[in-house]
Image 1 (tube, rainbow, N blue to C red):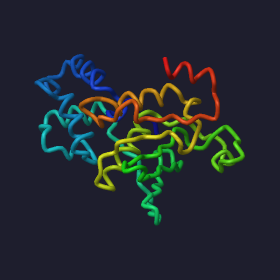
Image 2 (image 1 turned 90 degrees about the vertical axis):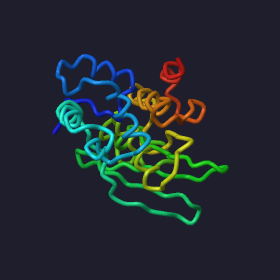
Image 3 (image 1 turned 180 degrees about the horizontal axis):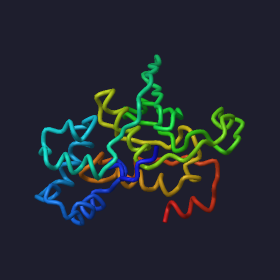
Length: 210
């Protein structure tokens, strides 16, 4: 079942501010609600906005009616001897995706998926055998980083789009996710620390850079 409300994990702070400003209800009024939402999700990494101790009851009620606060379902974790940890997540429609926490050159990196499955059939990748189920939404990409970091109790410094899917065949949502990750009040990941790996979708390479 599709929820037509936006998930805050896929919104930039300015978009959240615009949404709150446009609300006529007094429950959304007052200073700092967008910042409170961002701090709750990206600093405190609460499972749900309803768990935030900073947001008042009336504002929580408004948020529950106007935002889709779902998360990915963490199905399993698979640690390896090299300190990497593979995470399997279930999507709302039942599909499965994977994310991997990597320790590389003294820095924690999260390898995220951008699609459920993949339309390409690269010989070196098993994902192509699954076929493409659908593109991931920006919030589903960002939530991989949030949950992997929260599970490990670490601050993620690097993100690589090298999981399931071809990122540049989902360029709009990948770009949106990258914008959210670099927000100064959010995950604070440097643009230089986000790597997008592609099989060679050339037109979208230029579009993404622009």
